[in-house]
Length: 88
Image (cartoon, rainbow, N blue to C red; front, side, top):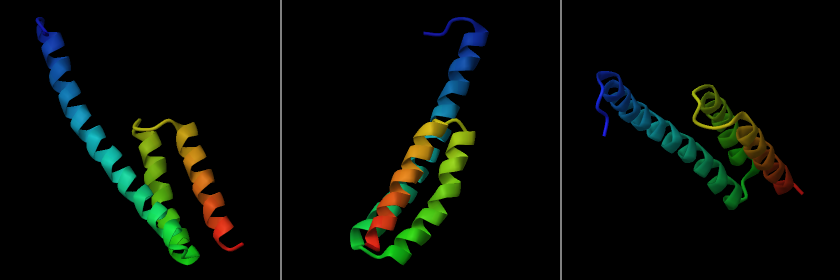
């Protein structure tokens, strides 16, 4: 348990950051789920729109420190290639 005033403050800050990060991560997952559902339905236009909406959110997750930039780059690339494969 935190004993010094500084460590108590850091513990309070950590709780707040954890809540914010949890909300951001949940929001990201929602956008990714919408893309996944659109891909599963086989509708390329709908999937493209969902990915276009998800990309800025993923990038925002990088700048806010929720996800690593390479992780987001990999996710965007894989989703784009799966959407592209729908037309074939």
